[in-house]
Length: 255
Image 1 (cartoon, helix red, strand yellow):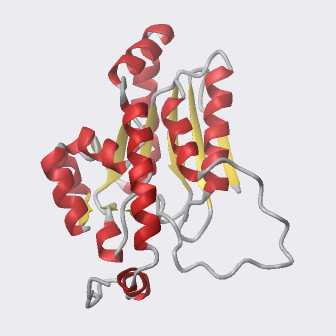
Image 2 (cartoon, rainbow, N blue to C red):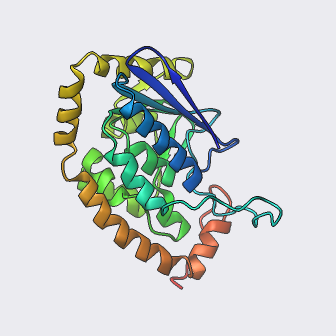
């Protein structure tokens, strides 16, 4: 997995992940992001993190159409469950600014919501598209999305699975600022640098208070999310949704 950590100055670091062309996520990638967060949280000088990705898309979520595993490939690492890693991302102590471009879809949206703040380009496409796949959302989105946009709007976005582009995302509070594509990384670093001006112990303490209960909410939410995902993964609707082309509306039959 390509994870790069760039120390911008004494107090701000960029954690960049790269798995082109769509930056689909998997436990390995999330674990490496978590490990980068852990090291920065313990290094004694980093105060804020920018989470970014290389390429056209921030993260297109899980790859439901991935090819079968290569039998000649080395065995995968033994890692905690994907959602246990999600909890670790939320528990780490440093504020995170996510820089979003292109597709921020499904679990990719869940990853973006794990950050404290989000800066996006106007062309970014944020989508909780699970219902359009005949699937149930995960990654604790049941808890994180309502905290950001409110319960009513979260329901609408989850029930419809529709795209939200940059301008609307800003209006909803789903992102905190829009940036020109060429300035996205720079603007995210600027926001992180402003956070890093605060007293580091106070910053950690206030963040802990403001996110109080979030990890517990997510821990309970993912239990239900995973159970529903396991049920829906076996349905005909899920097969139809996954195999549908982009923009195509499957004829779901409720089976």
